[in-house]
Image (cartoon, rainbow, N blue to C red; front, side):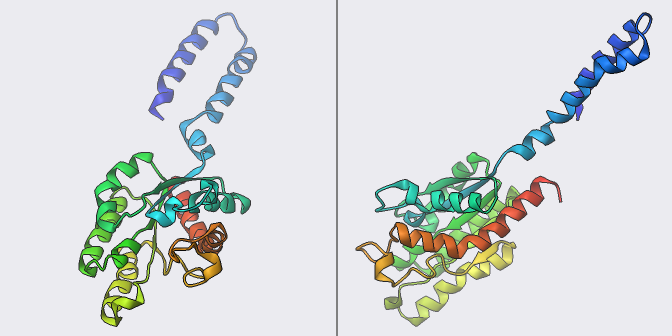
Length: 241
């Protein structure tokens, strides 16, 4: 509130000068609009009026690879769904096709320049497709989540499942990474980003990896309750709770 001090000091000086000739009631009426204006335009009030900014930080599943219209991509569909539920939000698209967790770690500082109130981390699918050692995936993903955590930003970690052709041992080690990091960091955990879509031909593009617009709609429907929880955490942090 230090920004108010010069305003009040000027007001007090003016009132002292006018006090000799202006009745007190008239002085109150004269300065009442100023008080109301200050209460309406204080930094806290302005901040509360701004939408919650959610950074969708991921790979091609976030970027909308293969879709004809980016309005059908995950960030855009998620924003519409949240607004339909009464949430004042802005979902920022920060997906890069082909991104691995290591690539994500290298650009997280840059992405946080968007000043988000919350972050959804959707990475790991390309690590699995490339059979990257789960030890490396865990190291990079933990680095991403810890970097976000240093800014105190609420985070949702979206899990991924390894391709079944890589075998049970790889799958067990890979699949456990996401939940473990979420638990350690206190992030919200959504176990499988493609839940309800993976393996369903009519919800996927010809590559059988990337969802169609209808597939993305299912992803959004499934993850929406977890994202609403993320939004509530962001609101609580903004309110200082």
